[in-house]
Length: 442
Image 1 (cartoon, helix red, strand yellow):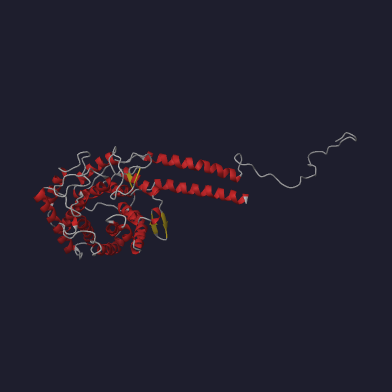
Image 2: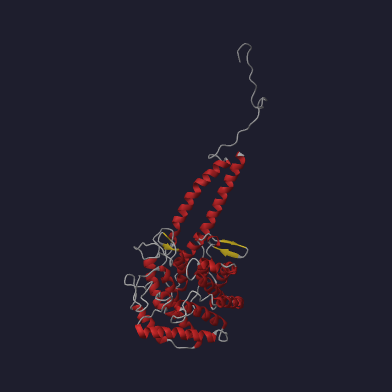
C-alpha cells in the first residue's frame, strides 16, 4: 500500500508539472497578428465545430436565459466568424458562405426578432437591424456582386440610413433606440457601420450621413473619459451614464469600420483608462480606473473589476487596430485562463458551459477589418505581465516536487530502502576472522 501511495504521489507531481508547462505555453500563445491566414483558419475551425454542435444542441436558447441577446449573438457571431474564415481561405469560401447563410436564416426568422419591438424606427430597433444588416453585408461582400442577398441588403441599409437621418434632423441625436425608451450608442455604431458597408457594396453614397453622425456623436461624449457613453437619453442622445467597457469594445470594433482615425484615437484613450491594474491579468476593466462598481446584466460578473466578455471582445479590437502588444497579452490571457480543451475536432473553453463566450472569442481571434484603411498602435503591456504567473506556478510546483522527491526516496530528500532479512554470518572475504582467546569472555 505504501508503495502504491508513493507511486501515485510521483505521478501526481509529474502531471501537475505537465499542466503547468501547458499553462506557460498558453501564456505565450501567438496572437492573430503574429499568425498567417492559414494558421488563423486552422485555429478557428475546431472552435466553429464546437459552436455548431452547441447550436444544434440548443445552446442559443440556453444563452438567451442568461442575457437578452444571447440567442441572437450565438447565431450572428457564428456567421461572422465563418465569413472571416472564408475571406482568409479560398478553399473554404463555399463552406463559409453556406454556414453564414445558415446563421442568417436564423437571424431573419421570427425567433430571431422575437425579443425586439417591430414598432421602433427602424423596425425591431437599431440593435437587430444593425447586426442583421452587417451579417448580410458580409455575405454579399464574400459572395460578390451576384449574391442573392444584395437587394435585401440595399433595402435594409436604406431603412437604417433613413432612420438615422430622421433622428438627426428631428433631435440632433445620432443614436437610435434598441428597445422602447432605451438607447445604447454601441448599437448605433454597429448600425452606421452596416450602412457604410452596404454603401461600398451597392454604390450608395452616404458620406454626408457618416460625417453628420460622427459630428453629432462627438458632442455627446462622456465628459469624464472623452469616449462615447454607455447609455443615452433616447430623445436627445445626451449621456445618462459614463463610458463602460462592455459597450466601448463594441463601439471601437465598428468605429474602426466607419472612421479608422477616430477609432484609433479612441482605442488609445480606452486602453489608458480601462486597462487592467491587476498584476498578471492584462484584461479590461468594466469601469474606468478609480471607479469600482459591481457588475450587472450588461457586463456579467466582474473579477477584480475586470469584465471577461469585454476582455474577449477587446482582443478583436486590438487585432483590427494593429496593436500587437495588446493582442499578444489578451490572447495569452484568454488561452491560459480559459482552460481550453480540444478533442474530436472541437475546442471549447471553461468546459463548454458558455458557448456564446466561445463565440465572442472566436470572432475576435479571426478578426479582420472589413472596410477602411490601415491603422497601427502599440498600447499593450510588455512581456513582463507574465511574471506573476511564473511566480505562482513556481511556488505551487516547488513543494510538490519536494514531496515527489521524498516519495521517490531520492537522496538527500528521501531515505533509500534498507535491506531486510537475516544478516549474513559469512565473513567478508577481505576481512580476516576474529580469533578470541579461551576464557576471554568474547
